[in-house]
Image 1 (cartoon, rainbow, N blue to C red):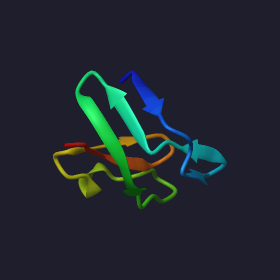
Image 2 (cartoon, rainbow, N blue to C red; image 1 turned 120 degrees about the vertical axis):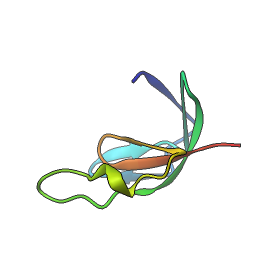
Image 3 (spheres, rainbow, N blue to C red; image 1 turned 60 degrees about the horizontal axis):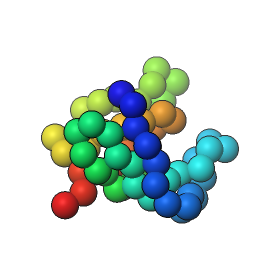
Amino acid sequence: MESSKSGHAITSHMGRPVAPAITNEQGSYVFDRVAECNEDGCPLDQLQSNEIMIHPGLIYRQGS
């Protein structure tokens, strides 16, 4: 999935900046939370239908 980030980083996670919002072909999303992950990865069942997860475990919810 191709996405573009907008705005200055609001924090960092695992050494990478966290953008306040991203946009892709499905729409605009705002940062919501960091996913709960373990050594096997980040389970997708923690996502709601209006959310996406991007590496490294950042969850964004669809903006209004």
